[in-house]
Amino acid sequence: MEKRKIGVGFLGLGTVGSGVLEILQMNREQVTRRAGAEIEVRKILVRDPHKKRAVNVNNDLYTSDADEVLDHPEIDVVVEVMGGVDEAKKYVKKALQNKKYVITANKDLMATSGAELMLLAGEYERNIYYEASVGGGIPLIRPLKHSLSGNRISRIIGIINGTTNYILSKMSLENMDFETALAEAQEKGFAEQDPSNDLEGKDAGYKLCILAGLAFNSRVNYEDLYVDGINGIDKRDIAYARELGFTLKLLAIGEEIDGALAPRVHPALVPSTHPLAGVLFENNALYVTGNAVGEVMFFGPGAGALPTGSSIVADLLDVAHEMRCQEEGSVMELHFQDKTIISMDKLHSAFFLRLQAKDQPGVFASLATTFGNENVSLDMIIQKSSTEGQAEIVLVTHEVEEKNFNRAVDKIRDFSYVRRINSIFRVIKT
Image (cartoon, rainbow, N blue to C red; front, side):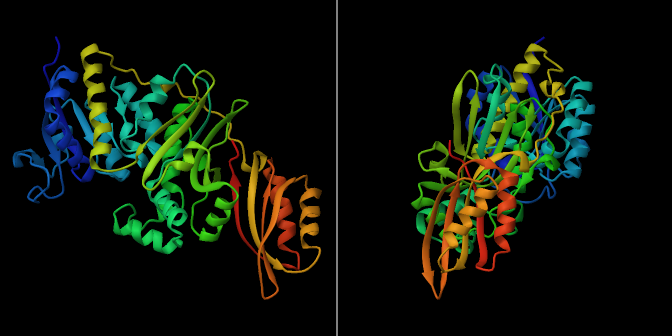
């Protein structure tokens, strides 16, 4: 018999949880019609049940005891929006064991424990929905699981961290230095007071684990990734990149090459004509290449109460459909495979390099010879400035095997005329 009400319990009621409740209230009629049942919030776990909150909720729904949510006999779906890993994992496991569906916005949890939790969901004939864990309001999980499932996806490239994208956009468009752009991002709420997870690429890395797993039907662990962040980027790098027709972005890239995977997060120069170059400020995007669909891009706000909340409500509607159709146990992630990870030194990349050297004859020739001896072909080499006997040199290579480029750079570091290697970035040319 079709269930006319679906009971929901919340673990947490911060920014995202409040956004979910706001959507359920303002779009109540539409959500009920599409769910085929009334969505009824029955308990909400919070630290302080007496705290005044922006969203209007009956105070009787608040509890500081997680078991009142997890053991509630009339709660069918648990929405985890509390963040963190250890406590959230414990609660999600208990919810599944109590045969409740789970919806989570927790990228850290899904990246580190997703495989384990999915196995548990399958064991108890339930499912975990996690659209909101990556990309905020942008539908990314659902297209990879369903819309593009008939494709063999060869590559995904994402701008999936709004903090770093905001900083790099400000540096590019307004010639800000790194510290000023970071301070503005913090002031506007796009960056945490401790932004290290964003700046070091860890946040994007967790999200890439989730996306690459779905795109390539594989288990991808954070330890499998090469991760490099944006700390130390100078506005001169961005200015020179622009002169050369590129935009500097922090990219999360996943590729499948001959059955093996190459997942990595790092800054890269993107051609100014590429769709990803126009993704600005806190926005996110994912560029996907499939053998049937070709190239498609998903774009939109990567965070925020209502955008992220909209993804959770969409998951709620999927749960309602699954309950109506009695499709328990349809956990596609149980069929993920283990695939070999390709080391970075075996990949092929083009590179941008900026260095300081003595302003003297023969420097260009020596650099070209050193790279040539390691089978690295130069696309261009330019002297940008010369002051007090020192020249700033920028060069861009053609696509080469990374280990060859690294060997050449190691030799160049030891040259007496080289004062400092300022920056090295990969270049995405297509």
